[in-house]
View (tube, rainbow, N blue to C red):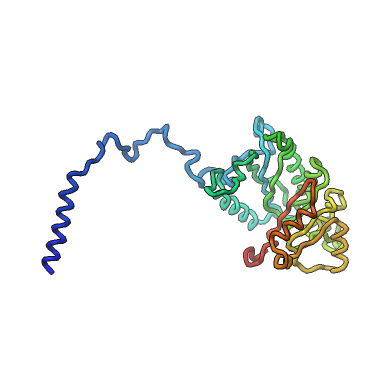
Length: 309
C-alpha cells in the first residue's frame, strides 16, 4: 500500500520536473484579457440576441414613412398585424408575435452549414417593417388602415428589378379577416390570384350564415373573408383549401358555395391517403400558372402541435 503511494508521488514529481522543458510564448505576444483594441471590438453583429427584435434579424425599416425609406429598397417586407376582430387587439397575440420574432432569430442570414438554400441570402433584400398601426375601435376602419398599409409598402420600388418591380409582403399575426386587405393589394399589382389556403375551416361562408344575420358590420369576419374576396373579384376559380377538417354549418350549402367561390378541397384525412407528395401534386395541378397567394391559419396543424387555437 505504501509502495503504491510512493510510486504515485514519484510519478507526479517527475511530471513537475519535466514541465521545466516546456517552452511558452513570450508574454508580450499574447493578448491580455481586457486590452483589446476598440477597432477590433464588434458591438453590431456579435450576437443574435442584441439590438431590435426583428424577424430573423433582418434590418428594420419604417416602411410607412417616406423619409425613412428614402434610398432604401427591398424585395420582401415583413408586416405584423396585432388585430383580432371585432374591436380588440389581443395581448396574447401581441406576445405570440414577439415570441415568433425571438424564435426567428435563429434564422440569421448566415450559411446553414447544410446543403439547403438559405432564403435570407438568396435573390431578395428582406426587411422588417414592424406593426401596421391599427385602431381597436372600428373593424372596417382598421381593415381600411391595413389596406392602406399594404398599398404603401407594396408601392415602393423593389430592389431586384430583374425579378419583380413590386415588393412582396409577408404578413404575420392577426385573425384571418386581415387576409382580405392583402388580397386587395395583390389584385392591384398582379390581378386575380389563386389562393392556396391552409386551414381547418373553409372561410368561404356567406355572411348570412356566419355573422351577417346580426348586421352587415358583423358579416365581414374570419369565416367570410374568402367569400367576400370572391364577390369583389379578387381571386381566381383555381383556388384550393388544404387541411380541412372542421364541421360545416350547412353541409350541402357550404360546399356548393365554396365551389362557387372557386375552391377545391384537400381534407386533413387526405394526408393519410395520398401523402405529402400527393397533396403537393394536387395543389400544383389546381393552381397551374399565374399569381398565387398563400395563406396559413395555425389551426391547420394537428392540435397536438398547436393547442388552444
